[in-house]
Image (tube, rainbow, N blue to C red):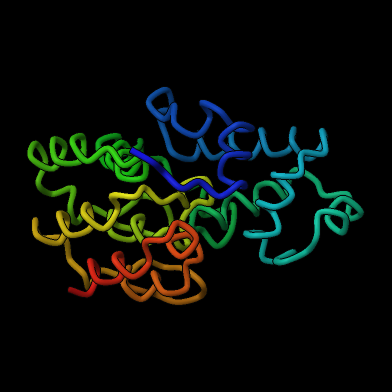
Length: 217
């Protein structure tokens, strides 16, 4: 299945590699996010431009700043922790440190299946665990599968658009996904349908009209 990937997504997938998806080796979510923060710090030290773009997108004190400006600030490991905390929906790193739970691996794998356009795995997972259609992420933003399909406000490396995304959204809704469920993002709480129109990625992928119909139909 063809998947639209913004350049920043491809760059970050390359930089972080297995750190993003090898969640089964972590006993707690906080341990995983700590490793992501440490990897980001390595990227800063190496001058990785994708990492600086990530910081510009999520560090509340540096939103929208250019790579050049960020490099001049001599960012440190605490800035990495703040960025990762914000990207994963937490207000501060101290909140991350309290997330002593393991991942809901079935949920995370289903999110990844959706974003890779793997409709058969999505159907198989839902058939085995119906509750997944309304499960909420254990990250601070509490996104559902529908929110991840909106490709807005979630982890930047997950903001990609498979061409069959409208079909999968319709499938989720037909199987009981709550369209009124809200995630915490941008200083408020929003449904997936409310987030779709401000996401550039479905527009760039050429499926925005069909995706909005899927959410609102």
